[in-house]
Image 1 (cartoon, one colour):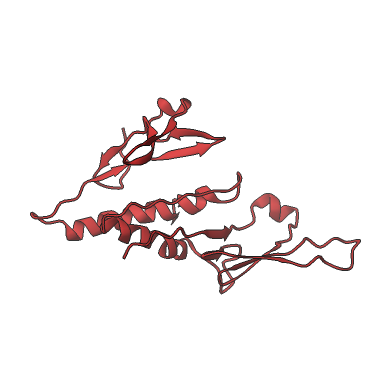
Image 2: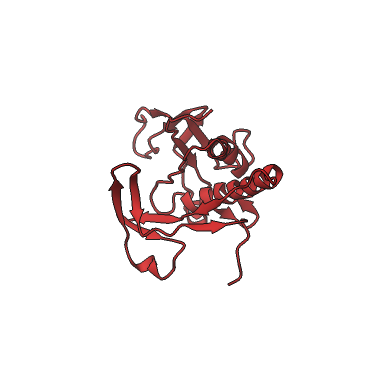
Length: 196
């Protein structure tokens, strides 16, 4: 059953090398769907300011893999990616919008690494596995893909390297709604990357 609800998820990424070298203190705690921000301790102050608490649909704590609440790439995909795939197979549109400052972990969450895939590769693998299982002479699937980046309020087509320098315009169709003018839409049959 498709839901028109927007889900908001936050993720605490692991410290990078620089943060570890500086002995950075983690000021974020997560408890189920609550994210609690503590004020950093200040050596000259005895009393710490009271924490701020925020509620989200999902809170993923990925700072330390040894902790029981650690959220792996698989756990993030199971919570967010599977619903998108189910809705797509029911004919609904879906979107994942990754937002955050540079270095906050968006690319790792969405793409992952070679040995620890993120949401997009897991989504694609699962999509084409399901298509292979369900396709028959009476039922066929057509998959088209677009891939864009919005950076500094400019939209770039990530599937067209020649157009990457050019910023695309967001327009509104009176029936279909908002769209990105000139964004490439390519038919694909697998998640395998071609060598060309």
